[in-house]
Length: 155
Image (cartoon, rainbow, N blue to C red; front, side, top):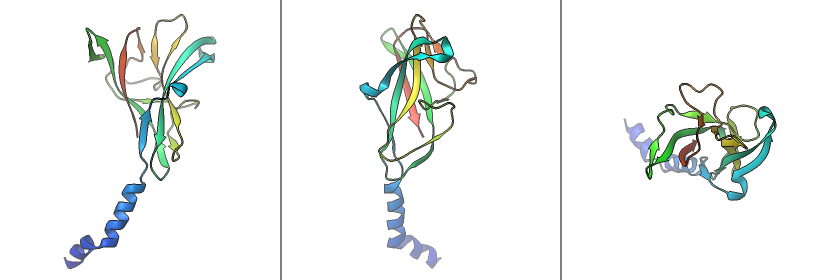
């Protein structure tokens, strides 16, 4: 019992725990107008010109963040001046890291920004498409034109 109490009072133990807490990875989502929008021809869609939208993710911590994924937590549509949940979006979906071929997790070094693909629209098509898993469970990934509010969380 005394060992437990003395271990709890040990200042070295508290310093080690504080050091681990301070040096942990800290992921931040941010918007950079120079990096967010990207025009390119979508080779998977008959080379139609598309506008791609990204959010930026940066690790503000002191250690590399290992095995990071981005998740689309919610989609809301503006109706009657109020953002309302989109009923066709039911489950959290994993987003794709930009310029990667699959949906696998990635490591993010300190102070190194990474683009996270969020959505795109093709020229001549009035459909907003979210970059999510190929077969999302029970979720709609294509939406009509409108004003949307989304919640993205890296972990």
